[in-house]
Length: 291
Ligand code: NDP
Image 1 (cartoon, rainbow, N blue to C red):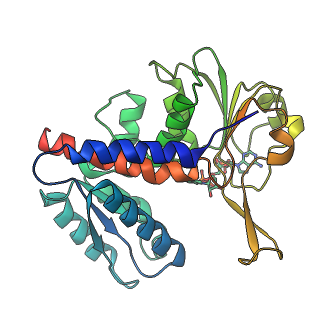
Image 2: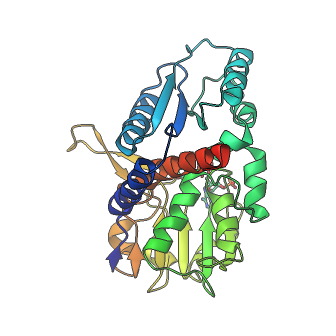
Image 3: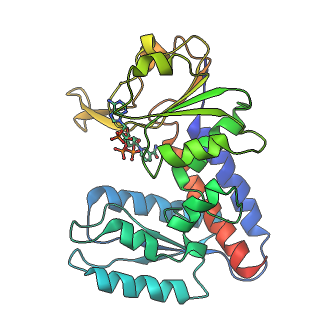
């Protein structure tokens, strides 16, 4: 069994981006990070993105609207950032307060600055295989992990469990694309799928994006399968200082014995998300400045 090391692959991408940015003439690519309120998870996510941006040599602009910000005020802020030629990428950190319609906010970000890839147009561009779009960071990260682990999906049966807009659906479309590394035969499963284990057992590559701790067990996979575990779940654990431990959607100790390659949790898909955000920001800069 080979471990697909997301930390190592993300570090390599960050180093490549750093070299690329160092060679850019003129101003550096700039990402605007919008964090509403003080949600503790958002605080740490935005801090990590700011730190990685600085490491690569990107400029970041942190905007901190209060928890009480109205949707219209947020729209006005995004309109301003959309129109600002010095800003290449815009990220609105999720989750947003309950009184804000998150999807409407994501749609307000200009498609050309949508480095999170949540805008309707960018999702459509994946279906059309239009390379000028932005692919959401987690599905982009999954494809990059596969590519850099020499897993070619051509001729393989790829089973995706989960059909969310941020992971399951886009990764299924990417695996299906008619291009090098992709060309998979894709099955997408969800909570209404009948006899799920019979389908997952057919998978050459299994992508689990379910949000249920250790849901995929050894009896649900075939020997030699490649496993991408997207899930991040907290299980209570009194032996840990934090009081919990992180597990994926796959029961790692048993499934890893059968898999040919597998991502761990943590340290698999997770680290790729920030790396792909940075890659999207450099791409947005190039598209905007024609560099
Ligand atoms: P969602 O809750 O939006 O989607 C979960 C999907 O799993 C749904 O399509 C749901 O089906 C399906 N599902 C739920 N229960 C079952 C079941 N019993 N059998 C089959 N399918 C089921 O989650 P996300 O896609 O946003 O995230 C999935 C996981 O990935 C989470 O653990 C999340 O924390 C993690 N994540 C990790 C990221 C990373 O950077 N590593 C980034 C984003 C997410 P239905 O549509 O029918 O409800």
